[in-house]
Every structure is written in structure tokens, then in C-alpha cells.
Length: 193
Image 1 (spheres, rainbow, N blue to C red):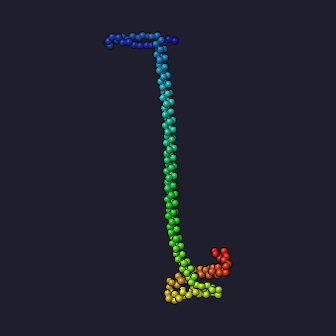
Image 2 (image 1 turned 180 degrees about the vertical axis):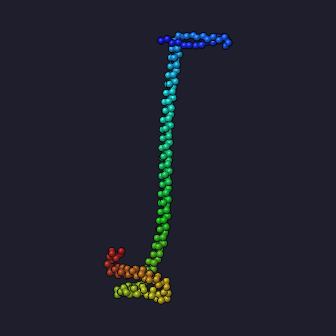
Image 3 (image 1 turned 45 degrees about the vertical axis):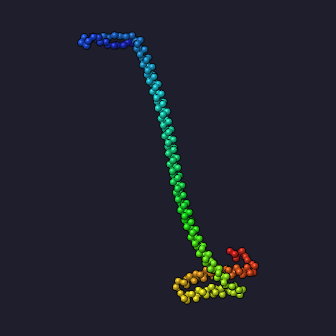
């Protein structure tokens, strides 16, 4: 196949321009086409290398994004755990405060009860139980002060006196039974309860 190149050469002035057509042999074309092919191959190779480098950079960027998302998720999880712990701590502190308040109230009630029990014990010790003393006599001894005071002030004090009689009567009976059992030497475990 014949190959060649067509070129134009302008000689002289523009007014007397003659066109000249020269045909060259195909050897120069083969050399320039091989240079172009090599240059195109170099450009393709460099573009492939750039694409590979860009892909690597993109993969690294995606890995970093994934790591950052993991870190953000861990931070979010830790914040949620801290909030949950703080709420649990606040609830526990509220329970502790409520329990301390209950303990304070129970101590106060215990002090009141111990005062009442001390008064009942004094009254029980002042009564001397005899073997012939019946339970009706004990009731009359405990009820006598309340009957006398009911005559003087029948309004609010009578209710309190009946309440004290209801509290003291079983205590005095129990104390009398306990003394009687200890004198006889027959103290049963069911009596202690």
C-alpha cells in the first residue's frame, strides 16, 4: 500500500503565491505513527496509574469514613450509657433519701413507743400481782384512773384514756403472766413470743 503525505509550501510574497504540492514517501509517516502510538500508550498507562491511585485513595477515604462512623457510634453509645447511669444514680439517690426519711420517722416512732413502754413497765411494776388477784381486779386497777378522769373531762381525754387502757391492759396481763411463770420456774418459749 502506498502511503504519503501532502503538504503545501508557499514561497515568496502573498501576491505571487503558487501552490506547490509535494508527495512524500511513507517512511516518515510510519515513524511518526509509531511515536504517536507510543505516546498514546504512555498516556493510557499514566491514566490507568492515576485511576488505580485514585481508587486506592477512594478506598482509604471510605475506610477512614467507616472508622469515623464507628468512633461516632461508640461515642454516641458511651454518651447514652453515661446518661442512663446518671439517671440510675439520681433514682438511687432519691431512694436513699426516701429510705433515710423513713428511718428517721421510724426512729422517732420507736422513741415514742419506748417512752410508752417505759411508762407501761413502771405501771406494771407498781402493781403487785398476787396469786389470788384475778384478771378483773387488774382491769379495775388499770381502769380506775381512767374512770376518775372521764368524770372530770369527758371530751377528748376520754378517748385517749380508753386508748391507753386498751394498750396497757394487754401489757400488764402479759407482764403478770411472765412474773407468775418465772416464779413457778416454768417459762415456755411460746410465752416469750
